[in-house]
Image 1: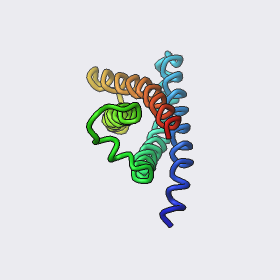
Image 2: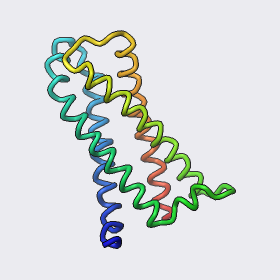
Image 3: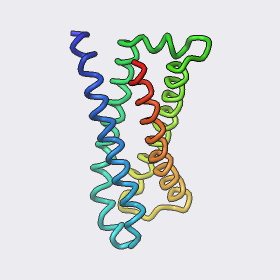
Length: 153
């Protein structure tokens, strides 16, 4: 059974990463191009919750499959070993970035869920947009380290 799970973990991880990053890029572009306040109020209350819940499921799947692959490839011993190798550096960077991304996602999700269809305060607006932009850029760096790790493994 474990063999089957570990074989599929990479594929599920890849599909969820594509979905996560693709959806993030779409929402980022939508946020930049949709300047009309009325259009935003028509689109976001409908698209936001669907996208938000999908992203929560995708993030949980990414974290679980990442953990499974960490066990399968003995990456936790590499993560905590002394010294610096290319794989340990890439793995540490990816874990740090994923941790920050997870926190930013929780912040963004809570604000978006709490204020869906309502007017946001200035602080909520700054936190929401800032976390959204942070998530977008972190995705690019995480993808880089994922590619580095896959090349090594």
